[in-house]
Image (cartoon, rainbow, N blue to C red; front, side, top):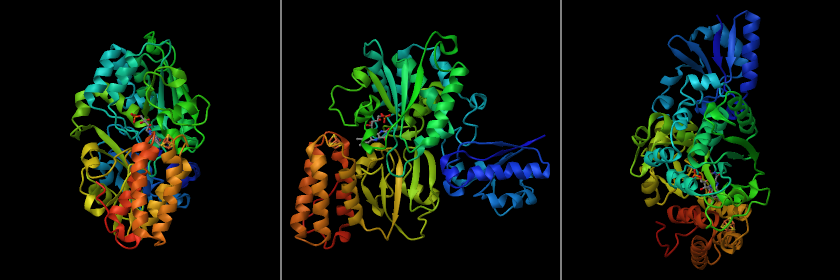
Length: 519
Ligand SMILES: Cc1cc2nc3c(=O)[nH]c(=O)nc-3n(C[C@H](O)[C@H](O)[C@H](O)COP(=O)(O)O)c2cc1C
Ligand code: SF4
């Protein structure tokens, strides 16, 4: 009987040689006459251990990692097919501390199953949510999403059920469901991991959204930097159609939902929902003024439900296990779980799905193991390039949308970028402002011109030219950007700039004389 060996197909693992490892295992097994079945799974999210190879045993899957192609003969010699010991032996995968202490609702299958097997997907609970939704009225589906407390995972944390209800209530000949898979935030990769590691989950979530809102056509807008995600989504769409879960007359229900993938062209602002719609329509990605809301007048002027990948991917659990089961996790108004992503200068980078309420300190030290350099962690940017830089004094703040905002932070899409004590926060502030210069869509003046002037002012402060006067100008400029920008690109760029100034004033030369508090 052949032994099943898992080698991830996730692009983080591929970048580290997973394809070559898979080939080496197949070749070595053939050479030794040992029957092996290699399954290409998603990643378990422990990226510092990639490529993480797993062997199936009677007591569960046993992990080895990180495995290089040249390790493969030695693994066979050591008897890894019988899960014997070896310097790369990590024990039962699900007993690895980093993994064991997570609360994986959305990522329950990722790394476990073959992402391109409908059979494997169903064997692990897949399509149970869709089947439940097919037996319900649209309003009942929307009610479940509302009751679950699910909020948008793309950044703004708007209650998903309210948006779904608005699209359901809109009257039109055609409605759309659009998935925002632009994932432009620094240090984020949870959307990519879903699309590569469990694409049928996103397809199921979007199909449920179609049934709930009356939309029969969906688009997944994926950033062009994600070729593996595009490929797995396209294959998974075909598999779902062939198996009757997508397309016309889903599971003989007389209900239809069609899905297509569209690639972006590499622009941060195209992650903003209205710029995304412009881009989907084939135009340059420029932000639209709101109202009208996309829920009422979105793609081609028709009612459109736009949600992030993780938002849609959270829905099948809610439909199959019930809104209350999802509500059980989290704190305050932040219900459920969030897949946090640890990146930057961190020893154990990767994905940690936890209920809201976990603290930054737990994520950074209990999961992340501290900085990769071994030096003290000095600053952390949470929530992408528009999030504040937080000092150590904020590390005990629970990651809950409201509590975190009160402490001056943004949970956003859950990306956490870590810096040690060698970071120059004045350069980081300049970088944040320059990011806005480069990525601004140009529609409004505070963002387009303000960010360029902002870089010049920060340069003068760094150079020590009329520091106090220029600090006043910088704060005034940030005020104008916050209150005068059309979207959060210009409106939130002051977050990283001012937090750097407020929490790390020493990096800007003399401590600013009369800096008001940032919070
Ligand atoms: C400049 C900018 C970039 C954004 N980038 C993304 C992105 O990459 N992915 C995403 O899901 N939302 C992004 N958003 C948020 C979207 O505008 C929108 O709130 C989200 O797609 C709604 O989905 P949700 O409610 O499920 O979060 C961005 C917003 C702004 C202002
Ligand atoms: S704030 Fe910037 S990105 Fe947003 S609409 Fe204005 S110019 Fe465009």
